[in-house]
Length: 69
Image 1 (cartoon, one colour):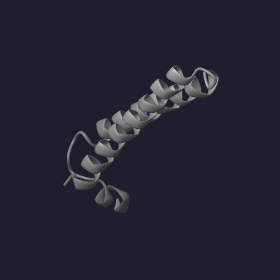
Image 2 (cartoon, rainbow, N blue to C red):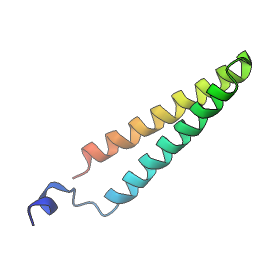
Image 3 (cartoon, helix red, strand yellow):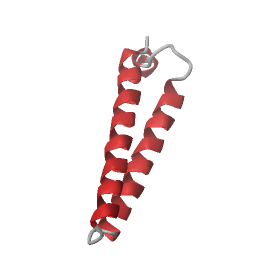
């Protein structure tokens, strides 16, 4: 199957996609909380940091996926 040749040989490829999805959910929840608490500046800043942290974590997973054999 041609599609199979595009996938890395590493067995945890789909685990990495699941990790990435978890980070997307984490960011979405933090973003939702940020919008819901937008008038509360300290909370807004906390949730903004949470979104940033989730995005960086997702970027690290993406990097791992891209370098997988």
